[in-house]
Length: 137
Image 1 (spheres, one colour):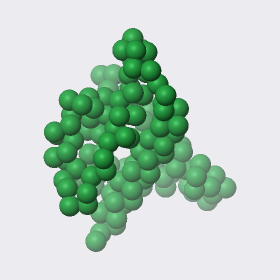
Image 2 (image 1 turned 30 degrees about the vertical axis):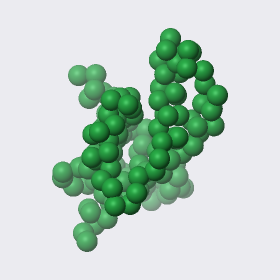
Image 3 (image 1 turned 135 degrees about the vertical axis):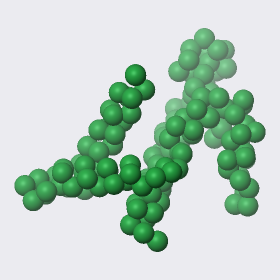
């Protein structure tokens, strides 16, 4: 397995952890969300959708998650859009190489006191900022 493939796998694992944390935090806050409120408030509707998703049965290991999302896209439209944007697999290693380059620029001898966590957070913010600029075009 090449360096780029390993990096892609690590990025996917990081995305999975972020989604797990998001789901856990949202579940705590949306346990008793009234359905009537969800109809009038987009934020409440999103929380209700996530709550329904969290209460759904977990897929078996032999089931295809892509097929499941395709079948359930009408039941979870906001989550489906998020999954399509955030959990896609890059068809090229170029984005990974860009991240390595950005990380290398951030974490040099002069800045070695930043720490791994801070470097990850800076890269995360920068990547999301770049994505937001592209979406605005």
